[in-house]
Structures are given as C-alpha cells and as structure tokens.
Length: 321
Image 1: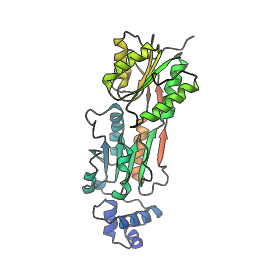
Image 2: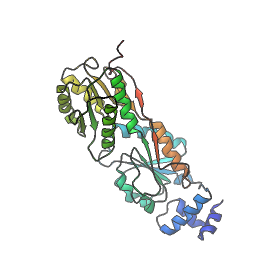
Image 3: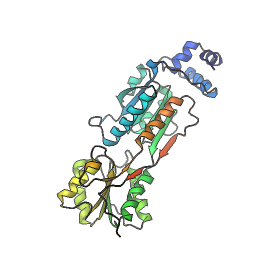
Image 4: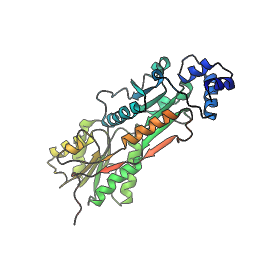
C-alpha cells in the first residue's frame, strides 16, 4: 500500500494524505478520519521523515520544577528509549495543549497528568496519546494507558511487612483523595491488610500531599503503636526516615519501613530502604511501541498493566529464626 493508493481510496490527493500523517493543522476532521481508517484497514505505516519523528512529553504544569521522583524516573526511561527508536523529544506542560495545534509530532506521552484533560484528544490530533500511570478517559479516541498494577504493588509491600513480623502497620499515601492514584492505592492497602487479618482504620491509613505534614502524621501513627510503616509515592522515603529519627525511633529495630524507590536516595539511606518500584523501562518501551504502531494499534489494548517489584534492603526487620 502506498500513499497514492491511500489517496485514491480516500478520494483525496497524496499531498493531503501526507498532511494527515504529519499532523497538519488545516485538515478537516472528516478527511483525517477517512484517511486514518483506510490506512488502518490496510495496515499502512507511514514513513515519517526525521523532522516529523517528534514525540511530545507532557508533564503536570504545577510541579515541573522540581520534577517529582516518579516523573523523573519515567522521564529518564523515555529519554533512553525514544532516541534508540529514532524519535526526537519535546517537553511541554500538560495545560499547554494549544501549542500542539501548530507543531508537527507523531505521538505524545503524558506523565502524571489528569485524564480528563485529554477527553477530546482524538478529535483534535492525528496521533496516539499514551498516559503513564493514569486511566484512559471514557470514550477517548486514540488514547492509551500504560500503568503499573497498584493493587499488586500495595499488596507486595504489606505482605512483606507481614512476613517480617509486623502486625500493626501504618500507611501514608502520597497525594490527595480524588487525584492521581491516591484512592486506588488506599483501597489496595485496605484489601491487603484485610487479607492478612490486620487492623486497618482511617487513623492508620492517611493521605498526604504536603511533605511538611509527614512528621505530624508519623507522630500520630507512633502513638497507636505501629511496628511497620508503608509510604508509597513521592519522596516519602526520605521524609519518613527523617520523621522517625525525630521521634528517636530506630529503623528497623522498632519500626520497619517500606517506601517507593528513589534512585538518588533509597539504597544510600541509613539503613538502606526496602522499596517497591515500577518497571520504568517497560512502561516507556510499551508507550513507544504504541506510538510507533499508529494508526494500526489493534495489537495494543487500551490499558497495559505491569507488576511492581520489591527491592529488599535493610529497613525492614529480618526474618525471625
């Protein structure tokens, strides 16, 4: 199948077909949809010139500097994966979608941005959009989700604390209810604790988007006699270790601690921190696979989910002999 054959079937000129695949802003939506439908039916993959192999990476507009820990690690994975496939990268804030109307790009990745922002993506842009660690908004066209299994990850941490003898576990989930992965993580922690017959109450399971409140919350958890602390998300491992030290609590002799992996801190802490970590390279490679396959994305589900891994270090009490 050639550009000319696509053009004949779509009853447009070859130049129009080329403009569709280069995301030209002046193509009528009905023409664009017709060309893409024919291309997909015939499994046609456009060969983009180098100037058109641009991938847009969108970051949350409110916290671009400093980039949060998870965003930074996904960004690092993408900056390794995309150039290896011959793509160039442009970074913008997620609230600046209007800029995309005037530039050429062949795909986009949004990290940590709220899905509602992209409800009409398929109407506005001729390319696929991959959301990292967020769900696809209902009925959104050409939008995909590549994420980690939050239920499996939370269970992984709770089970490890339980296996190492913790029987009263406190949890501080980074974020606010109603945003990001906060609520799904909360539900997952509750389910994991119940599966082990562990007591889990609102006072033991807290959400916090403000790092400065961690010390206060840790103090309240310690008053309830916790012997394990799980702090998923953000840079909570650093803050939690600091908070426990302020209360003269020794890790792991008095309180075992699990956090999310921070490549700049976790293994260098004293003691080194046991963490859960996403497979950032797998997330990035799958996102690029989807972008590269467009418009024939039939082999890719709307949502691809991957397991967390547990990195066992010294911040959790050793197995009792």
